[in-house]
Length: 428
Image (cartoon, rainbow, N blue to C red; front, side, top):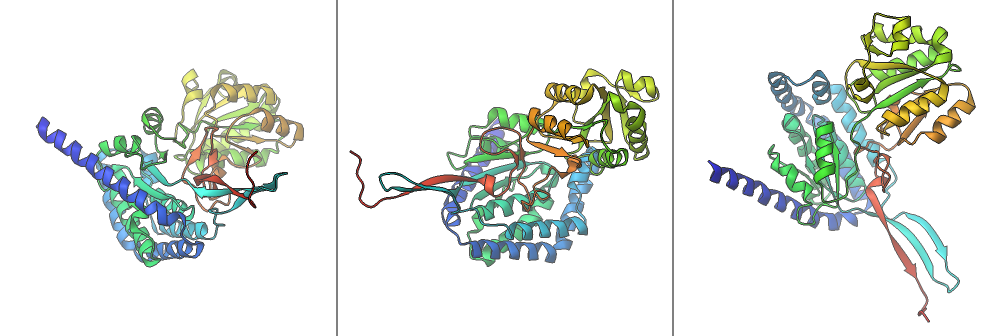
């Protein structure tokens, strides 16, 4: 049995190395592919997604049945579920990426030197992107489209719980590549659910992978960040906060808080902590809490909130550090924007924070003093999304400070090189 296990592991390693070699080979022609060819492929992909809707739904039904049998959490099932509207959205997302400006070859900066040299900084693809994700079959299309538009080959490793759905979507992407005359290996899906495939990708596949992007739960992202031997674009978790200032309009604040928490509770941009200005206790607190309760949200309240409404569940220290991904929110009273900034600095994962206020001085302090990737004023945290930023889609959200931060779209999937034009200059 041990010998068989070793053989199976060796087979996975060999499979992944072959995938890596083919991705690296595809990356070269893709890096110089014309905008027209890439857009033609994307249009064909979107058409194939719509044409194959029934096949995708049938594959998704298998995944959903397996998820039900496995007892997966409701938040995971929500991310896994596809329906005609979501499939149409996937196709529209691909078309939106096609409509974006091609970043490859863009001159970011240009300047002349006193000796007559003309220097340009120009966008170039990163090369081969590895994307590891869970429960989100739409990531197959989003990541494939974004990497293609930015001239990168991509290796997709979806979760075992979404493998059937991802295969059906991936087949549509390959149809688009082939129709446009681009290499089919430009977008590859790891065909096995074996966890050893993830470990192989984290090694870089013998130099084939340039960047890893994980999208999934905290344990997956932590593993990738710990074990990866190549750069990682990621966020560990989305501990997103909404601060309601005393200057906020009550109705607006109520709408934004409920939407931030309850529109989709299982996404990384969902609010997990509500902070209310102590000066707004008598005006804002109860309308917001009543609206959350009516929407089906469970309240975990600080001692100050419990004095006003003792019926809520007491919040513990752990609540301020928890990404619920469920219809639960922790609520605390803070001493104005200073208190909100202090709380967020202590507990935030630096993903997304929102301030609801009409006082411009409050907004300025919030924006200047909070160091998170995305900050919003008078808007829901659920706008923390590349599509909502006009990027067409996103491959993920990064909270690091090197290279990519916030939604990772086509521009963030490029590097740059310098082009220097001379007229015979030599260095003295």
